[in-house]
Length: 335
Image (spheres, rainbow, N blue to C red):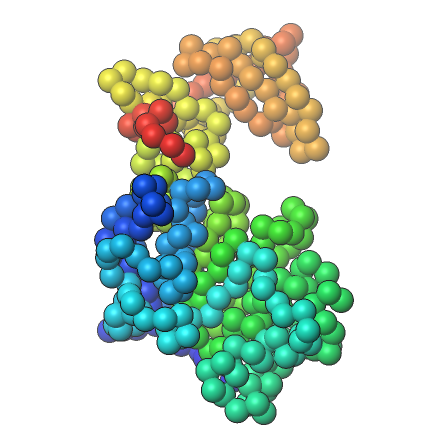
């Protein structure tokens, strides 16, 4: 049976990364990075391409050696241990399935590498395949699977190891948007079922918010904010974080600050009327831009709300108490 761990306050973190630094030649990829993942927790490491998040994952997996810092798993220092002794399960971006092995052979490979007898390894593999609804396809080769089925097979291979820590590197990025949307919920449910800790690396905000209990936002090799997904979106620490998480209305303020106007701070149909300078119909409503004293204010209106536009104007009231004042760091360094 796959491991089913109960989280207790007395357990050490499943993963503790402390002051990790990694260079590639003159390039500083990760800078003084520290983060804990608790037993049973799914944490998403979120950031744009090139920010260093995959380098963190590769250091945790043992595929890269950090220049300095410490990596501890369940109380054991593994900073300089090889990958095979760390006891993690990993799902790669390209799935890394062996083309010459069956689905069952691929999934049983992880336990076999941990010296589990063949019969037990195949039993674990079949249990993991049943979890991801691939039990009836165990005899197929990877090239006989769809993209979504390959993703499930790669996840089953990680689950079959019984590892206390799963590392997932952009696991849904090779799939089309419709399939990614479907699999986000499945991935969250599977990780909750196994109760293994998981570190999910992604550049997709929706994936991070849908799958993970906590989200850590990374920029230019550094950790900039950590929190529960909804709280992170509601209270971004800086203007760059707000923009990266998808806030549409961010305006420069005095003294190096910025004003973030969340949708919750906007009341439609009341207050002053503002000119609609642009409209774009979408499959879910209308995207509009208003000429507002703060600046061009962008809104998404439902079909019902679109009816509030009269003579090219929309009445709108901004709740000043709901506007966030944050440091404006959008122009600092690279993304």
